[in-house]
Amino acid sequence: MNLLIESFEGGIYLAYQVTDHNRRLVMDSDHHPKKFMSLNQVRDHFNDQSITSATLIHNSAYDEMCGEQCGSDMPLSVDLRW
Image 1 (cartoon, helix red, strand yellow):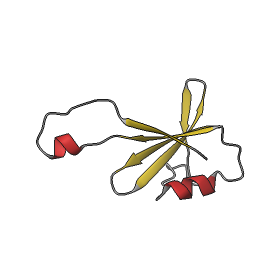
Image 2: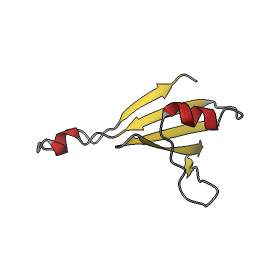
Image 3: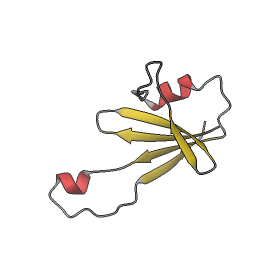
């Protein structure tokens, strides 16, 4: 399984299961997006499943928060070694 993990302000992470060109948001038992509070929590959640790759995506709003013109539309992407 391939995972895409997106980080948000406030230390919240959402995980997506990726197959080919489709990605499916991981949901909780109430069919709401499952929120993780750390990368370790994501890894622990998928501990019993075979993870082929995991990628962390982080969009920064730093330029916008400082009143600057947004620099790059490209998010930071980091391959995790799990």
